[in-house]
Amino acid sequence: MKQYLTMVYKNFPDFHATIEDIIAERDKVWILEKCTMTHTVEYRGIAPTGKKLTETFAEIYRIVDGKVVEMWTVIDELDFLIQLGVIQYTEKAKELFPKHIS
Image 1 (cartoon, rainbow, N blue to C red):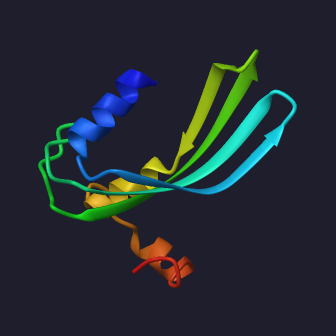
Image 2 (image 1 turned 120 degrees about the vertical axis):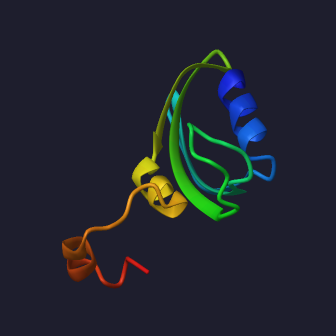
Image 3 (image 1 turned 90 degrees about the horizontal axis):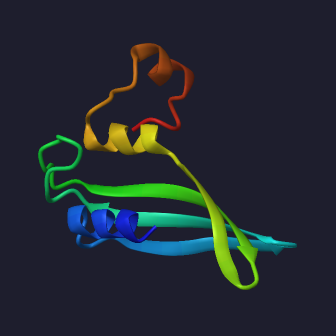
């Protein structure tokens, strides 16, 4: 986790996460986060675009004796890459989902 966060803040110095929802039950905590950042340095071989990006994370933590022992993260990486301009919607996708594609 520490390595991941170090990489995030190195690549996106203005990274900011807002917790949208938290659910805790038994030994699990579910967190929904919305993150904003600006692409100002090379990331995964992608030259800086200066674009402001948003990304949604769903994280699940398993807690034992007050400590995180496991963590799972689901990230909408496809939308992130579309925002960067690396991937573009097809004409068919634009036709099928006109309200979701700007």
